[in-house]
Every structure is written in structure tokens, then in C-alpha cells.
Image (tube, rainbow, N blue to C red; front, side, top):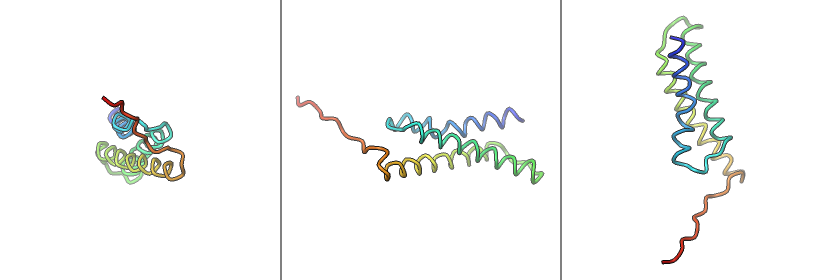
Length: 99
């Protein structure tokens, strides 16, 4: 069971940064790092509270999915904050050579 929780935690950490790192080439390290950390923290915190503190059992994939959703929210939130403060330049479209 501990291995399953760990594997789901890795998935929660890597899901959003990996997927959006492919589709958004301008994704920077602070955004990916914040998203990865928040995904693992949410997954492990909810699993720990539900299982060990409350004494019940919760499927680790449920808490991992919540971690991925929070990770996405953090990724877009940090990106919007950095863009609004001018720490990310607006993407520019390179000039296309005329044919």
C-alpha cells in the first residue's frame, strides 16, 4: 500500500508540469516547481488525514487526482501572477520570411 501511495504521489507531482511543459514551451521552472510541490502536498496531506488521523480508508488515486487538480490551479495561478507582475514576457510571434 505504501508503494501505491508513493506512485500516485509521483503522478500527482508530475502530471501538470509534464503535460503543460510539452504544450507550453515558455513554461518556466518556478511555475513547474510550485505545481509539482503543491500536487504532492495535497495528495499526501489528504491521504494522511483521511487514513491515519480519521482512521478511515481512502483510495490513493482519489487523493492523487485532487493533487493533480490543485497542481493545475497552482500552475495557472503562478503563471498569471508572474505575467501580471511582468516577470514573464508576452510570447512574440517570430517574423515569417516572405516566400
